[in-house]
Image (cartoon, rainbow, N blue to C red; front, side, top):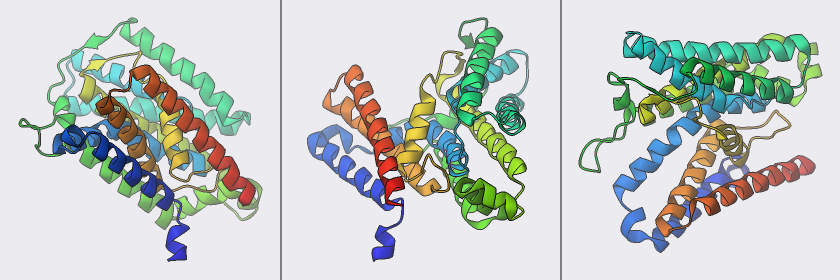
Length: 314
């Protein structure tokens, strides 16, 4: 039993259940509806998919501040591709490929220049946001989604089937769990985050691992952008501002350490769900949006403080 309680995702799970129960008591007539549950899953999808990639980045000892810009750029690329006559699958793949290329650039710059990931991704955050605005002509792009909107659509009647995007998120999470826990690459990611010098001495291809991690994180941000476009049905270069903070917070709340070497995809998903439940619950209770933003900021700061306390105990 003690071993179970020591797992990194147990704390986030308990917090999620406690917060969910609190809002059930406060607003049982609306919060307990199955439609609300499905809506919360839908609202978590983009953050959760991006957070799976961020988990790999943080576990290997890095950070990626360009996630929100990558998602926005993906929505613009998809909208432009659809306007140009590409089919929905090809447009989505093009968007994911563009985001993966941005991730590859992040990894290449970190390894080649030896600059800290914070600085590199802070720069690419601005570059990608500017590229999105330039490609979109500094305005939203309306495009026929050609079925992509069905990925995040809730069936008529309110309690319909869970959107396909939620199932895609679950598959991505299972992929992340398997990759991190049961593959050589996953062991290399943890080793680099735990002690890069030791990992290099043990024969781990550190540079290759870093490049692959950032490329994979970029591709997952692109997939998150596909679901974001499916939700908005427009290419919006100003979308997802601040998304990177939510994604990082989800990882840290889920037990990930900003010092590297520690984190789990399961905990990350619970962290993402916790953030969504708090936002949805506050909306049902009637808390103003500006107060919700303050609460989100407080949660992020508390999560970082808890991470520091964990590191001191270690």
